[in-house]
Image 1 (cartoon, rainbow, N blue to C red):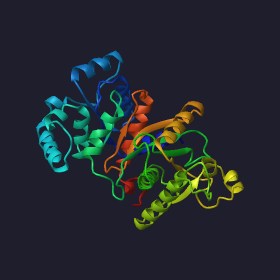
Image 2 (image 1 turned 90 degrees about the vertical axis):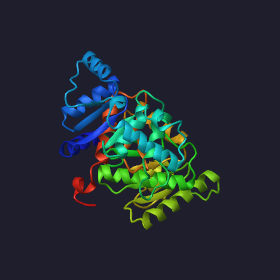
Image 3 (image 1 turned 90 degrees about the horizontal axis):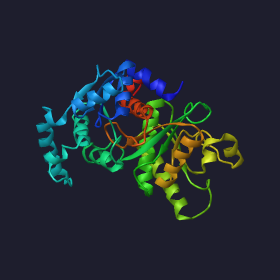
Length: 343
Protein backbone atom coordinates (compact mmCIF):
# COMPACT_ATOMS: atom_id res chain seq x y z
CA UNK A 1 0.00 0.00 0.00
CA UNK A 2 1.41 3.47 -0.90
CA UNK A 3 2.54 5.56 2.06
CA UNK A 4 -0.15 8.23 1.70
CA UNK A 5 -2.91 5.59 1.70
CA UNK A 6 -1.54 4.32 5.02
CA UNK A 7 -1.44 7.86 6.41
CA UNK A 8 -5.05 8.47 5.37
CA UNK A 9 -6.19 5.40 7.31
CA UNK A 10 -4.33 6.58 10.41
CA UNK A 11 -5.81 10.06 10.24
CA UNK A 12 -9.29 8.64 9.85
CA UNK A 13 -8.73 6.97 13.21
CA UNK A 14 -6.98 10.01 14.75
CA UNK A 15 -8.21 13.17 12.97
CA UNK A 16 -6.08 16.33 13.04
CA UNK A 17 -6.44 20.06 12.40
CA UNK A 18 -4.15 21.41 9.66
CA UNK A 19 -3.90 25.15 9.10
CA UNK A 20 -3.30 26.51 5.58
CA UNK A 21 -2.14 30.16 5.53
CA UNK A 22 -3.16 30.55 1.85
CA UNK A 23 -6.76 29.46 2.26
CA UNK A 24 -8.10 31.00 -0.96
CA UNK A 25 -5.65 29.15 -3.22
CA UNK A 26 -7.56 26.67 -5.45
CA UNK A 27 -5.10 23.84 -4.77
CA UNK A 28 -5.42 24.34 -1.03
CA UNK A 29 -9.21 24.31 -1.28
CA UNK A 30 -9.15 21.10 -3.33
CA UNK A 31 -6.82 19.45 -0.80
CA UNK A 32 -9.01 20.68 2.08
CA UNK A 33 -12.10 19.21 0.41
CA UNK A 34 -10.36 15.82 0.22
CA UNK A 35 -9.39 16.16 3.90
CA UNK A 36 -13.03 16.64 4.88
CA UNK A 37 -14.45 14.06 2.47
CA UNK A 38 -12.07 11.39 3.75
CA UNK A 39 -12.88 12.29 7.37
CA UNK A 40 -9.27 13.05 8.30
CA UNK A 41 -10.02 16.01 10.53
CA UNK A 42 -10.65 19.73 10.15
CA UNK A 43 -8.76 21.91 7.65
CA UNK A 44 -8.34 25.50 8.80
CA UNK A 45 -8.21 28.06 5.98
CA UNK A 46 -6.82 31.54 6.60
CA UNK A 47 -7.90 34.40 4.39
CA UNK A 48 -10.78 36.60 3.34
CA UNK A 49 -13.97 34.61 3.86
CA UNK A 50 -15.69 36.03 0.77
CA UNK A 51 -12.70 35.32 -1.46
CA UNK A 52 -12.47 31.74 -0.18
CA UNK A 53 -16.19 31.19 -0.72
CA UNK A 54 -16.03 32.64 -4.25
CA UNK A 55 -13.05 30.48 -5.21
CA UNK A 56 -14.77 27.40 -3.80
CA UNK A 57 -17.91 28.23 -5.80
CA UNK A 58 -15.91 28.51 -9.03
CA UNK A 59 -14.45 25.08 -8.30
CA UNK A 60 -17.87 23.67 -7.35
CA UNK A 61 -16.48 22.81 -3.91
CA UNK A 62 -18.50 22.69 -0.71
CA UNK A 63 -16.73 24.40 2.21
CA UNK A 64 -18.78 22.53 4.80
CA UNK A 65 -16.46 21.00 7.40
CA UNK A 66 -13.73 23.57 6.73
CA UNK A 67 -12.99 26.23 9.32
CA UNK A 68 -12.37 29.66 7.78
CA UNK A 69 -10.53 32.30 9.82
CA UNK A 70 -9.96 35.91 8.86
CA UNK A 71 -6.88 36.70 10.99
CA UNK A 72 -7.54 40.45 10.97
CA UNK A 73 -10.96 39.84 12.59
CA UNK A 74 -10.00 36.94 14.84
CA UNK A 75 -10.32 37.15 18.62
CA UNK A 76 -6.86 35.53 18.73
CA UNK A 77 -5.18 38.44 16.95
CA UNK A 78 -4.57 40.64 20.02
CA UNK A 79 -3.24 37.80 22.22
CA UNK A 80 -1.01 36.59 19.38
CA UNK A 81 0.37 40.10 18.85
CA UNK A 82 1.14 40.43 22.57
CA UNK A 83 2.78 37.02 22.67
CA UNK A 84 4.82 37.71 19.53
CA UNK A 85 5.99 41.06 20.94
CA UNK A 86 7.21 39.29 24.06
CA UNK A 87 8.98 36.65 21.97
CA UNK A 88 10.45 39.36 19.74
CA UNK A 89 12.05 41.02 22.75
CA UNK A 90 13.16 37.81 24.48
CA UNK A 91 14.63 36.17 21.36
CA UNK A 92 15.84 39.30 19.61
CA UNK A 93 13.74 38.59 16.50
CA UNK A 94 14.27 40.97 13.60
CA UNK A 95 10.68 42.09 13.12
CA UNK A 96 9.52 45.66 12.46
CA UNK A 97 6.70 45.14 14.99
CA UNK A 98 4.60 42.26 16.23
CA UNK A 99 1.42 43.85 14.91
CA UNK A 100 2.86 44.28 11.43
CA UNK A 101 4.27 40.75 11.37
CA UNK A 102 0.90 39.31 12.38
CA UNK A 103 -0.65 40.74 9.22
CA UNK A 104 1.33 38.00 7.46
CA UNK A 105 -0.85 34.90 7.52
CA UNK A 106 2.22 32.68 7.79
CA UNK A 107 2.96 34.25 11.19
CA UNK A 108 -0.67 33.91 12.31
CA UNK A 109 -0.72 30.22 11.27
CA UNK A 110 2.58 29.59 13.05
CA UNK A 111 1.23 31.14 16.23
CA UNK A 112 -1.83 28.89 15.94
CA UNK A 113 0.44 25.84 15.84
CA UNK A 114 2.65 27.15 18.63
CA UNK A 115 -0.41 27.60 20.86
CA UNK A 116 -1.99 24.24 19.92
CA UNK A 117 -4.90 25.90 18.08
CA UNK A 118 -3.87 23.68 15.13
CA UNK A 119 -1.96 20.40 15.00
CA UNK A 120 0.19 21.21 11.97
CA UNK A 121 0.80 23.73 9.18
CA UNK A 122 1.13 23.51 5.41
CA UNK A 123 2.25 26.74 3.72
CA UNK A 124 4.19 28.08 0.77
CA UNK A 125 1.58 27.70 -1.99
CA UNK A 126 1.83 31.36 -3.01
CA UNK A 127 4.88 32.74 -1.21
CA UNK A 128 8.63 32.17 -1.35
CA UNK A 129 10.25 29.41 0.67
CA UNK A 130 11.97 32.01 2.85
CA UNK A 131 8.67 33.71 3.67
CA UNK A 132 7.02 30.41 4.58
CA UNK A 133 9.93 29.09 6.64
CA UNK A 134 10.97 32.23 8.54
CA UNK A 135 8.05 32.26 11.04
CA UNK A 136 8.46 28.54 11.71
CA UNK A 137 12.19 28.81 12.43
CA UNK A 138 11.67 31.91 14.57
CA UNK A 139 8.70 30.79 16.66
CA UNK A 140 8.56 26.99 16.93
CA UNK A 141 10.97 25.47 19.50
CA UNK A 142 13.53 22.94 18.33
CA UNK A 143 12.95 19.20 18.58
CA UNK A 144 14.74 17.36 21.36
CA UNK A 145 18.24 16.15 20.32
CA UNK A 146 18.27 18.49 17.28
CA UNK A 147 19.77 21.99 17.03
CA UNK A 148 19.48 22.52 13.26
CA UNK A 149 16.13 22.79 11.45
CA UNK A 150 16.13 21.54 7.87
CA UNK A 151 13.79 19.74 5.49
CA UNK A 152 13.16 16.42 3.80
CA UNK A 153 11.40 15.09 0.75
CA UNK A 154 9.48 11.82 0.74
CA UNK A 155 9.61 9.77 -2.45
CA UNK A 156 7.10 6.98 -2.82
CA UNK A 157 6.49 4.56 -5.68
CA UNK A 158 5.41 1.02 -6.48
CA UNK A 159 8.89 -0.56 -6.41
CA UNK A 160 8.61 -2.17 -2.99
CA UNK A 161 12.18 -3.49 -2.96
CA UNK A 162 13.52 0.01 -2.38
CA UNK A 163 13.59 1.80 0.95
CA UNK A 164 10.77 1.28 3.45
CA UNK A 165 8.22 -0.66 1.35
CA UNK A 166 8.81 1.65 -1.60
CA UNK A 167 9.38 4.86 0.38
CA UNK A 168 12.62 6.84 0.63
CA UNK A 169 13.39 9.91 2.74
CA UNK A 170 15.79 12.48 1.21
CA UNK A 171 17.46 15.31 3.16
CA UNK A 172 18.29 18.13 3.09
CA UNK A 173 16.59 19.22 -0.13
CA UNK A 174 15.44 22.73 0.67
CA UNK A 175 17.05 24.65 3.54
CA UNK A 176 20.83 24.52 4.17
CA UNK A 177 23.01 25.03 1.06
CA UNK A 178 26.36 23.88 2.52
CA UNK A 179 25.75 21.99 5.78
CA UNK A 180 28.63 21.33 8.15
CA UNK A 181 29.31 17.89 9.60
CA UNK A 182 27.49 18.95 12.76
CA UNK A 183 24.47 20.13 10.78
CA UNK A 184 24.46 16.92 8.72
CA UNK A 185 24.40 14.99 11.98
CA UNK A 186 21.23 16.85 13.03
CA UNK A 187 19.70 16.45 9.57
CA UNK A 188 20.30 12.70 9.71
CA UNK A 189 18.75 12.28 13.17
CA UNK A 190 15.72 14.49 12.49
CA UNK A 191 15.00 12.76 9.18
CA UNK A 192 15.41 9.31 10.69
CA UNK A 193 13.01 10.10 13.53
CA UNK A 194 10.31 11.21 11.08
CA UNK A 195 10.91 8.15 8.90
CA UNK A 196 10.43 5.88 11.89
CA UNK A 197 7.30 7.71 13.01
CA UNK A 198 5.68 7.39 9.58
CA UNK A 199 6.74 3.83 8.68
CA UNK A 200 7.54 2.11 12.00
CA UNK A 201 10.63 0.69 10.27
CA UNK A 202 14.08 1.01 11.80
CA UNK A 203 15.69 3.93 9.95
CA UNK A 204 18.66 2.79 7.89
CA UNK A 205 20.53 6.01 7.22
CA UNK A 206 23.07 6.33 4.40
CA UNK A 207 25.40 9.33 4.57
CA UNK A 208 26.01 9.79 0.84
CA UNK A 209 29.16 10.72 -1.03
CA UNK A 210 30.91 10.07 -4.35
CA UNK A 211 32.90 7.23 -2.77
CA UNK A 212 32.23 4.29 -0.48
CA UNK A 213 34.54 3.75 2.47
CA UNK A 214 37.56 5.06 0.59
CA UNK A 215 40.91 6.13 2.00
CA UNK A 216 40.55 9.58 0.45
CA UNK A 217 41.28 12.62 2.60
CA UNK A 218 39.34 15.00 0.39
CA UNK A 219 37.43 17.57 2.48
CA UNK A 220 34.08 16.49 1.04
CA UNK A 221 34.75 12.90 2.07
CA UNK A 222 36.03 13.89 5.50
CA UNK A 223 32.89 15.93 6.12
CA UNK A 224 30.57 12.96 5.49
CA UNK A 225 32.84 10.66 7.49
CA UNK A 226 32.77 13.07 10.42
CA UNK A 227 29.01 13.54 10.13
CA UNK A 228 28.55 9.77 10.28
CA UNK A 229 30.60 9.51 13.47
CA UNK A 230 28.72 12.39 15.10
CA UNK A 231 25.30 11.02 14.13
CA UNK A 232 26.10 7.56 15.45
CA UNK A 233 27.35 8.92 18.74
CA UNK A 234 24.40 11.28 19.18
CA UNK A 235 21.85 8.58 18.31
CA UNK A 236 23.46 6.16 20.73
CA UNK A 237 23.62 8.71 23.54
CA UNK A 238 19.93 9.54 23.09
CA UNK A 239 18.94 5.87 22.66
CA UNK A 240 17.40 6.60 19.25
CA UNK A 241 16.78 3.37 17.30
CA UNK A 242 18.49 3.71 13.92
CA UNK A 243 21.36 2.37 11.83
CA UNK A 244 23.79 4.88 10.31
CA UNK A 245 26.50 4.19 7.74
CA UNK A 246 28.82 6.38 5.70
CA UNK A 247 30.35 7.47 3.58
CA UNK A 248 28.42 5.54 0.90
CA UNK A 249 27.72 5.93 -2.79
CA UNK A 250 24.02 5.88 -3.55
CA UNK A 251 24.17 2.59 -5.48
CA UNK A 252 25.85 0.84 -2.55
CA UNK A 253 23.20 2.31 -0.25
CA UNK A 254 20.26 1.01 -2.28
CA UNK A 255 21.40 -2.10 -4.17
CA UNK A 256 22.37 -5.25 -2.27
CA UNK A 257 24.41 -6.73 -5.12
CA UNK A 258 26.40 -3.56 -5.68
CA UNK A 259 27.06 -3.20 -1.96
CA UNK A 260 28.37 -6.78 -1.88
CA UNK A 261 30.55 -6.20 -4.94
CA UNK A 262 32.09 -3.17 -3.24
CA UNK A 263 32.54 -5.19 -0.05
CA UNK A 264 30.24 -2.90 1.92
CA UNK A 265 28.55 -4.87 4.70
CA UNK A 266 26.14 -4.03 7.50
CA UNK A 267 22.42 -3.33 7.95
CA UNK A 268 22.43 -0.16 5.83
CA UNK A 269 24.34 -1.36 2.76
CA UNK A 270 21.80 -2.09 0.02
CA UNK A 271 18.92 -1.50 2.45
CA UNK A 272 18.93 2.27 3.09
CA UNK A 273 15.58 4.02 3.53
CA UNK A 274 16.98 7.42 4.56
CA UNK A 275 19.45 9.20 2.25
CA UNK A 276 21.42 12.16 3.61
CA UNK A 277 23.03 14.26 0.87
CA UNK A 278 26.25 16.21 1.35
CA UNK A 279 24.69 19.51 0.24
CA UNK A 280 21.52 21.15 -0.98
CA UNK A 281 22.56 21.00 -4.64
CA UNK A 282 22.84 17.23 -4.73
CA UNK A 283 19.71 16.59 -2.67
CA UNK A 284 17.48 18.95 -4.64
CA UNK A 285 18.75 17.71 -8.02
CA UNK A 286 18.34 14.06 -7.01
CA UNK A 287 14.73 14.27 -5.90
CA UNK A 288 13.66 16.34 -8.92
CA UNK A 289 15.32 13.87 -11.30
CA UNK A 290 13.50 10.95 -9.69
CA UNK A 291 10.24 12.86 -9.67
CA UNK A 292 10.44 13.66 -13.39
CA UNK A 293 12.24 10.62 -14.83
CA UNK A 294 11.21 7.77 -12.54
CA UNK A 295 7.63 8.87 -11.85
CA UNK A 296 8.04 8.94 -8.08
CA UNK A 297 5.36 10.60 -6.00
CA UNK A 298 7.04 13.31 -3.95
CA UNK A 299 5.79 15.00 -0.80
CA UNK A 300 7.42 17.94 0.92
CA UNK A 301 9.35 19.91 1.79
CA UNK A 302 8.61 18.51 5.24
CA UNK A 303 10.24 20.75 7.84
CA UNK A 304 12.46 18.84 10.26
CA UNK A 305 14.07 19.65 13.60
CA UNK A 306 11.05 21.49 15.04
CA UNK A 307 8.81 20.40 17.90
CA UNK A 308 5.64 20.98 15.84
CA UNK A 309 4.99 19.50 12.37
CA UNK A 310 4.94 21.69 9.27
CA UNK A 311 5.54 21.57 5.53
CA UNK A 312 6.72 24.20 3.05
CA UNK A 313 5.27 23.27 -0.34
CA UNK A 314 6.44 24.53 -3.71
CA UNK A 315 4.55 27.29 -5.50
CA UNK A 316 4.35 24.79 -8.37
CA UNK A 317 2.71 22.12 -6.19
CA UNK A 318 -0.50 20.42 -7.32
CA UNK A 319 -3.54 19.81 -5.13
CA UNK A 320 -2.33 16.21 -4.85
CA UNK A 321 1.03 17.46 -3.54
CA UNK A 322 -0.67 19.74 -1.01
CA UNK A 323 -2.87 16.92 0.23
CA UNK A 324 0.07 14.51 0.52
CA UNK A 325 2.16 17.01 2.47
CA UNK A 326 -0.80 17.66 4.79
CA UNK A 327 -1.22 13.91 5.36
CA UNK A 328 2.44 13.62 6.37
CA UNK A 329 2.19 16.62 8.70
CA UNK A 330 -1.05 15.33 10.22
CA UNK A 331 0.42 11.91 10.97
CA UNK A 332 3.47 13.48 12.57
CA UNK A 333 1.06 15.03 15.07
CA UNK A 334 -0.35 11.64 16.11
CA UNK A 335 1.23 10.21 19.24
CA UNK A 336 3.36 7.21 18.35
CA UNK A 337 1.74 5.14 21.10
CA UNK A 338 -1.62 5.58 19.37
CA UNK A 339 -0.17 4.52 16.03
CA UNK A 340 1.83 1.48 17.07
CA UNK A 341 1.19 0.87 20.77
CA UNK A 342 4.85 1.52 21.60
CA UNK A 343 6.79 4.68 22.60
